Every structure is written in structure tokens, then in C-alpha cells.
Length: 118
Image (cartoon, rainbow, N blue to C red; front, side):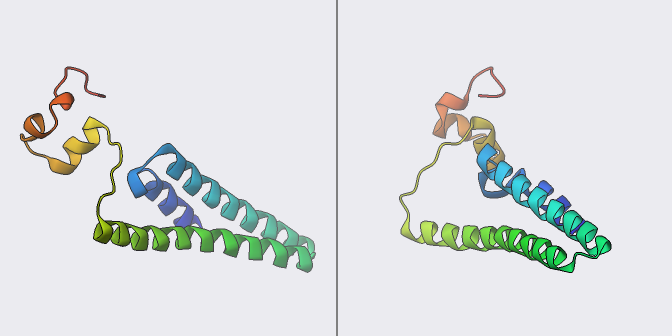
């Protein structure tokens, strides 16, 4: 569980564009999964096995949602690539990271500024 939460935190920063909404989704799901496991273990130690079972099922659902989000993102990216014609906004720093070429000034003249965060 710890490995999946830490891995989700690492992946959440860059996954699917790294937008704030994506990061928030990863962090919320992993926090919910971790909290469910902790509460489930506490309920198990108290002897409330019905509550333990409910919390552990919640943890599985949260982890399943994270895995499903990964799988659906991969499939959706492949479909969008095949269809073509999809456009999205990107910061100049993201374009620079993806292309890593001096041709950026010719292809994207608006990215040639003195502002490094433009």
C-alpha cells in the first residue's frame, strides 16, 4: 500500500499532462486508499470485523479506481492519436521539454521571450 501511494505521488506530477486536476485526483485517491487501510486495520484490531471488511473493500475500490484511470488514459490516448485533430494548451516550457530543439523559435515564436515561465 505504501509503495502504491508513493508511486502515485511520483506519477501524479507528470501523468496525463500533470495538470492540477490530475494531480489532485491521484492524491485524493491515494489518500482515500491509505486512510481506508488504516481505519480498516484499526477496526480489525478492535475486533469489529464487519467494519474491517467494509473499510478494506473501500481501499480496494480506491486502488481499482487508480488502476482504471491509468488503463483508460492509455486507451484514450491511443484512440485520440488515431482520430487526430485533438489540440490542447501547453506552456512553452512543456513544448521545450518535449521537442528539445532549437527549432522552437521558428515553430513557436511566441515562446521566445525573456520570461522563463511563459
